[in-house]
Image (cartoon, rainbow, N blue to C red; front, side, top):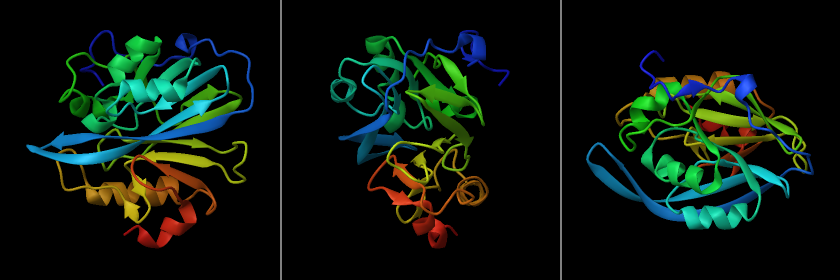
Length: 228
């Protein structure tokens, strides 16, 4: 990550946001429509918005298409961070705008900076690291680096989450109902995404709830036979 802009720094412990008192964590969800563009092609897409937190504070996973719609889901809560699963434009196009609207930092894995820079001139505010724990509303989201869909694609895993006996996994575009996310475009690698899923995600309990970047939710157990 030697090519990082001076303002793009690792998310060090002494720089972590000031997390407030914790209530019961919950997950809010909305679906927004827009486009995804790469390699000279543009596609109509629908993206899931995931907001994790309690009544006072939250984090937002990805910032697709519509800041106003995301702000509706946030309501009047303090946004601790905007967590990017990867750098494709349908997931990060409005991340800087959402950061300005909420005062939250935008965080992305450093390996996805080349993808991010296809959309934005200014780099995000900080770096996500494999194994990093992001505390929010009494639970910890663990960053899992899962390259393949893009080099810096990550998932966020909460081993313990109220209402989910075997935890929750937010997979972005790495794992969907039906199997791995798309490859075959710039920055993607099919063998790598399969290896990431097999070694990093399929090790989780079968009943782990999988909340995806597009489309319906699934479970780890339901997708075992679909990863090849």
